[in-house]
Image (cartoon, rainbow, N blue to C red; front, side, top):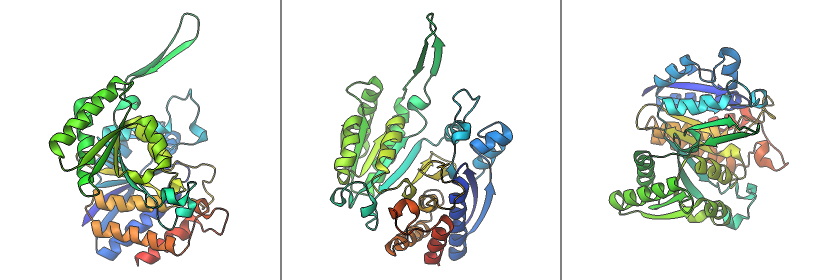
Length: 357
């Protein structure tokens, strides 16, 4: 296979972890006989500094022409001024919208070698394996928003949560299809007891599941209950589908089950075109440049890239097995070491490469 990969290192620790992801991609290409070409483009805060735009047109053009995109992270204190003309996160929202990346896949898997790293008791988290489907281009983050000054000088602000039938249908279908290859169970998360938009979500979800996935069990759970269940009984869930903001919050909560944000990848995909793959952690500016960031989430995002965009299942599995063997040998970056011996970003990437070889 020949494929074009765009690298978007971004800000903070993004360049450090993306460098390890690129090393793994090159090693896989060599091992399995593929030809990959790489283009590196700016996004986020560094793009604002250089171009005044968190998603320059040349970056968007390169991404549209790619087979897949690997992203590091965007943002940091340097660009946190709420009065700024633009912010790094705008680039991330825009690339999702421009490329039609409506589905965010976030696996939350607790490795048997990291059970002790979780803040929860081992008997609660051991065996957890959840695949979240978060709708990515609708809801509060993309609805009408604004602010106004009141006669008394105070301010009023508003953000609108909005969804249409087809937006709900397409994300529910992806969740149902994934469930057929897993345990045939889908949980939909909403707030139908309060929000009209959630009542539409629930009606559409139930119709699609009944009509198109009669072989898959399904249930509805309110978002506040789901927040509790994730830390009380995470093993009871398999595939979870929800809207944009609920998915954002719940998957970040769920990311603590394995003990570190540095272990979890994500994929953002659309109906066609390139997918975007990234670790779910942020730019971590407090450790940027220190060489201690955990690259495993990015390396596992590479596995998702190979599986979902390039349809290379054996190559994806080889990466996941290599990561598993490195963890089984007891190697840990600082975020997983609980104060014990740890290794750096480049060394962890090198160990995965050695296992791949």
